[in-house]
Image 1: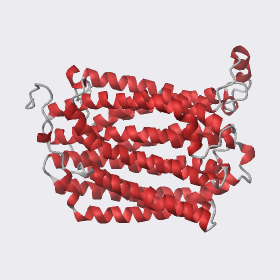
Image 2: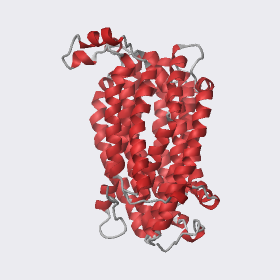
Image 3: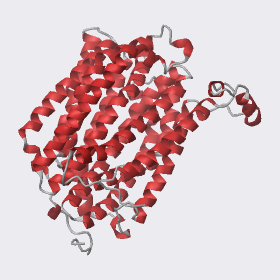
Image 4: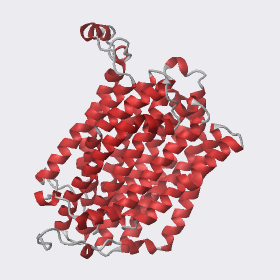
Length: 493
């Protein structure tokens, strides 16, 4: 392996920003492929199974968001140390981040497995029903493999801060391909699997079933496929990091937790983890609010959430690319260049979203209906609800894109508390309260929730943009001198 990091502190800015962000966007789209593949094949089992996946995802997203938020501290610290020329501290931070976040992942695994039934009940899944049972089994399997998920998140975050976004993309592509291959068989088994008919191999499913007797694991099968597919990129990523084959090369002593470094990781990462946790908690709360409208509404919400990921995750990808560009340029003492990166990324995302929304708008019903069994698509309430979301909330995703990129600028500067407060407002100040009022008080039903989503995106983009224009966010630079030298290392290395 070679160092694939991109230089973003000199010369033209737009091209390196695209080169850095494009693999992240592609990785985020591949991440959507995980969710869409799960939803598509679980959808063959019916609306109860899709609702179960929606309930489960509210809990899984909470866990992933908190852990993923902590890894962003690695991105910020590695990028700013590299920008300032302090490579040795970048390596040290990498080792410390791996050790600390792994311990957090192990704690999450135990807590999530034990508390899954209770947590699912809190987000609206009625105990004793099929959705609750299916969701419990799915969630517990995911928590058993949570360490593998976190290892890849760590690897991705550290390399992103170093300026290498392509290596993670290659690993993600292999992982998604494996998940797509495993999903149909682990969910449906062999006997009644429509995949064989689609590829012109009718009868093979019956033959395989006769040989194996395998009927699939249902909703749980999607979780098994995800855990297996996550294991391989996580293991390869940790090997590359430990071997020093990707530019970052932490030494063995860097993995021994040191209080000063862990404190700095928490200082930068805790607000991001809290932000992501509050957002994920908000998603769970949204699920509970929508559950007031019934399981059909929850099923539709699960489908549109995965469709919306096609927009949200690329925006998040550009935001993460912006984090690295801003971090390295502020570390190099170039705040104007950092600010220009945010403007360029925002304009690129907004333009792209306008095109995607315009293309999806005329096909709202067809897109939503693709995630339900053929017999349920013709007059399904789920399809009606999902199509309404595309038409009402879809255009507001242009504002969501600008909102996410601007937050990336704040995080890259080290202003993670500001990013946390501005991010949390979208769900807890606007979306959730308005959703509850529109759904229950005004009696608009689940369509009222879709209007609340649209309003929240627009309002949050306006408030965050106004704060960004104040210019004080560049004061949040992480000072490398504040980090105690790790052990007896030569920080001039």
